Amino acid sequence: MAFVNNPKYTGVIPPVVTPRSAAGQIDIPSLQRVVEHLIAGGVSGLFVLGSSGEVPYLSNAEREQVMRTIVSANAGRVPILAGASEQTTVRTIEEGAKLLALGADALVVTTPFYALSNAGEIEAHFRAIKAALQVDIFAYDVPVRTHHKLPLDVAIRLATDGVIVGVKDSSGDDVSFRQLLLAAGGIEGFSVFTGHEVVVDGALLGGAHGVVPGLGNVDPAGYRRLFDLAVAGNWAEAAAEQDRLAALFNIVYTPDSTRVSGGAAGLGAFKTALVELGVITSNTMSVPMEALNAQEAAAIRVILDETGLLTAVAS
Image (cartoon, rainbow, N blue to C red; front, side, top):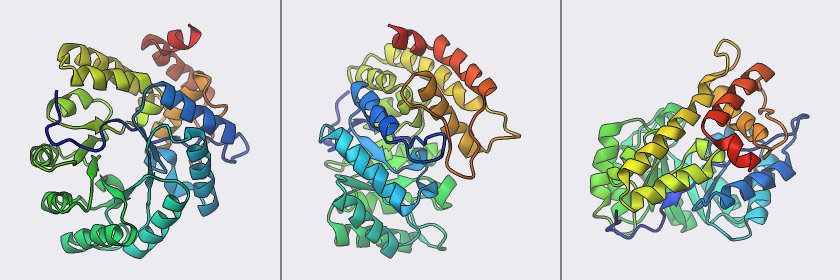
């Protein structure tokens, strides 16, 4: 598989989780170990302060603490893409400038949220941020959180004009995603990443340039293998690796949905798995989310064992 448009960004760029201590503080040593775990797994970059990083729950001071820690631990080894997540254009520019000063190499920006925007305002939002900061920008299409789908024609214009260098698509809109992939092939340097963990092989077959998997926190090496197999055109082996990762993704279904929210279930499963793998020390969540309990952790451990991760740790 060859990317004919020479995209600047390709590969596996996981959204880094934010470990907390049992007392609820940012766990710096655990976060440093997460960075080492991801880089050892062969990731192509780090997406800091994304949804999997619990960014809406972090105070301003905690966001800075997370950025400083990851930038320091990374030490320039892979690009750092930072989520500038704010409701409106002016606030996003302020947040983006701060993250760039802390060491971000590029920004990941959603459509405006809370504000009632239309397509014209969404396009103006991205253009204003680019004009103000003059940095690589990924558009993060995640309507489940922003309640705005990034319009396809807007994305294509922004890409063609060099306002955005890529899109991280977590929209769940397969038709729009395919149309974006078709358009992306003719836009020099432009990347399309999927944010969906269990259909990466299909996305890559369709022309996607990479993946931003929350589950990549748990098994970065698995996603790297999947990507490399796809690039080499070994689609049967890529599908087999994707099947194993899909089985691993079942960790997000282990929490009791009557006790734990949907957001806490997924992120809590990633954190709990990382505790089981010895990467972080606690699966504490940001307030008000509940952490997974011992019974749920035991169920996750079984899945980790069945998908070969505990064996890899033991060896």
